[in-house]
Length: 237
Image (cartoon, rainbow, N blue to C red; front, side, top):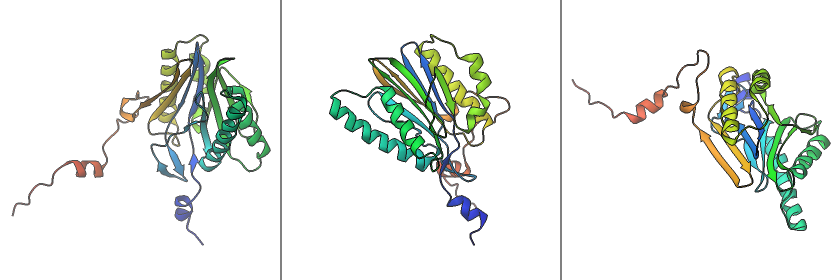
């Protein structure tokens, strides 16, 4: 029989996560942390949870990493076929409905919640949430993952209609850093994707550049980093 430690190391990868989608006056901003866990172990501290579906639509993944990657791969394939047949890019609503269809049809097997965000020439910037079970929700902003528990009250107070791009990006970074401070399953760096009529902009915020909250400790170099960066001193007899 496998020990509990072996089960945790070899268990399924789960993105106990913080993912966010926010609309602003002109587009959308998606944001996520970067910690992927296997049991109580950090399997990947710099994973990218914001996946490209088309040139103008992206998806934030939470829950089972395998499930969310499989859904996003299928949706990307279907959208590619859709674009070829119609001769124009798919809308955000079409992409969200494909995610919803796959999630709902397999709701007894999938353990993943997703946020779809993008911009198209018909409806502008749109955010859709597809939580566990496959419900499709069109929202001005939405949050997901284990870190979202700590953010509902914050968003009720901080989000407002008609934000500028800079205000929306700052809100997303602040919210993810707040969740990282409270949620042990969220951590690492913060990644954002801004989508509007001008295209897509990706940004990366390393851990030492994020604001500190409550009694958080400043990030410290690990012993391995210290040893590798310092030259050994000669032994003196």
